[in-house]
Image (cartoon, rainbow, N blue to C red; front, side, top):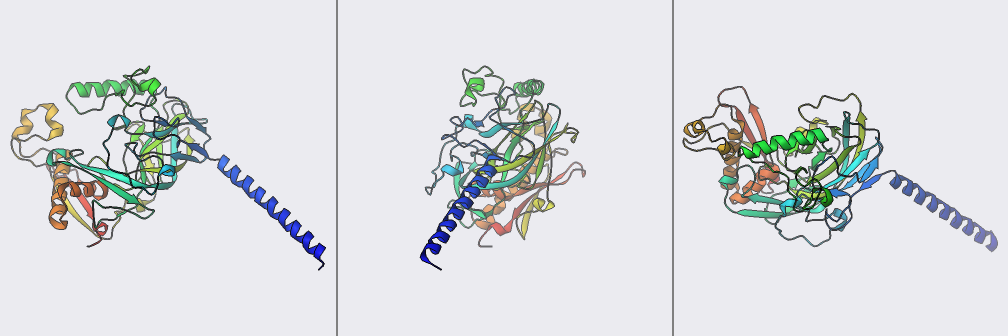
Length: 422
């Protein structure tokens, strides 16, 4: 082969490689272009045009997607302190004080093409990529806050397999990532019904999170000078539209069925959890930022969601992430003269005088969780705030039975494989 032939052949190879590279680059661009990317701008939700932390039918859509098209949500943690995962560095975050007005940042809302009020939106979670860090609060908050003293905050380091925290030595929590919040926007009629019933409950003394303008986003609608200052729903409770359901089984592979109350539905996702026990009893799970991929389908004759959203997926997700467990039971028993905190607003003299409440699942659950916190302290040597955090991120609260009056049964299940020294 002559020198000129070799040079010609080399030149042809270079040209071929350049064409191939250009083709692949175009293919990648086309693939990325077929994905609707939502959120991820700015240092926090208020700076991000693809993020909100209130719910109202007039919130503008931040993106549009066709049914079946992949949507990538760049989400932020529940307190909006960790940033999106693209902004996280090797520097571990420090403890912080929560601005409650910022809870929960949600990425969206997304307009789903062809969806109309009255339809059902099927949302399939296809992948969840965790951030590098997370946090859990434990102590004077959550389900049995009256039984706790003091407050602790635990910072977690995450990878694709497990989470660890210097504040909980000897504990490794396996990855069970899921979004706490998956929601559509309420319609005008649903909004007014929700506002009326929650206001009535508040006036009766019940614990309710009414509209709050401070740190509200979008500010022009929900903020201190907003046009709907007293109408934007907080994201703390779940409702008919979905919202903060905090169901740990809604992991990748699961399809969630939500009602469409407005055209386009207004899909939003947030409050990502790396892991959580059934109950999230301290008020927080392992709270993280994450990237979430979903697809959607619009059902014109979907399931009846009168009683709330539905979901389906692999039965493997119903199992506890452990080969062995230890469980504590609870029944609706109490000391005479005491009133459980959640019942005080009823001001019933009957409750205080009884030692046994008929079929009260809340009291039975309190007893099961209190017993589990005691067990973790006594068996593993953690303090009560540590034990409460472990219960929140790893212990499953389940109903044993509802028919054996007056004492229905609740059980709290602790997966033992989370402890490195078993």
